[in-house]
Length: 290
Image (cartoon, rainbow, N blue to C red; front, side):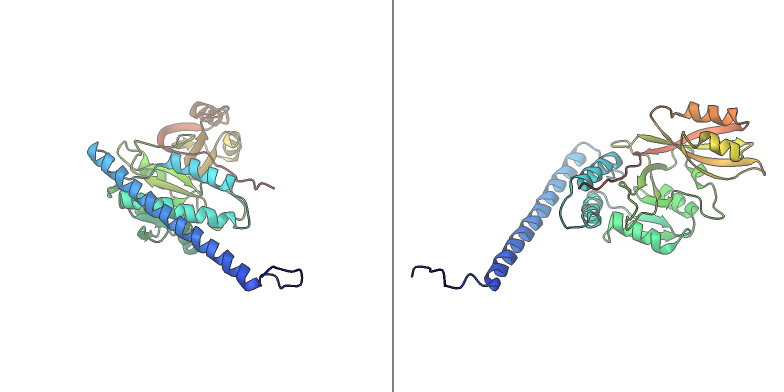
């Protein structure tokens, strides 16, 4: 029968049914792609095994930082960027776990809820979580593990200790990342944390070096002198005027260890020692488009 102008249009139910069918099609395609990703991971593990490179953590900090920057910067539409980042963090961390099982050790001393939120946002629920009351327990657990990761606050809580001095040995764990990879004011898991692990031999992020520095004559003037050059965590060490510093130095002008040490000496502080204890990607702030 020929359609006339006074015939009723397609009902809303028909339109909704079609849209829901499209959603089902997309969901099935997304699931199929995840299965395909898993098959590629299987092949990746086999290649690593054939090359004798299957031991240790499969965590690749530089690649993950780059991936997360691209994902949040290219995102558009009504889905919150927090959700997009969280989905990809779970996908990446879980597939990393499938390649080489690991646990995450987290220091709860600065607040249990924020650290748990940060851990689960970045690593999901498949990766086992072990909690500790203090960074020392985290460092010791990572040191005695095969490929576990540790999370400690990237700031000094009240009464905090210089936990990073335990990273100074050649075979000791090292800082390999700073989370979140992408920073923004309203991040749902925005607690700044350092991720430590056994030294990463492949895929390390080296935009920022972290140094354990011990000084005498530490004061407000010295702190102001190095503030433009590096991010610093300081705790008292060896007397009233001594301090143990964790110094994060960008590897670009005017940064560099020598610039920091020179600024300390010019301020009247005396440098007792300096040891490299890791590196991580530079801090990256997301700027929403449009």
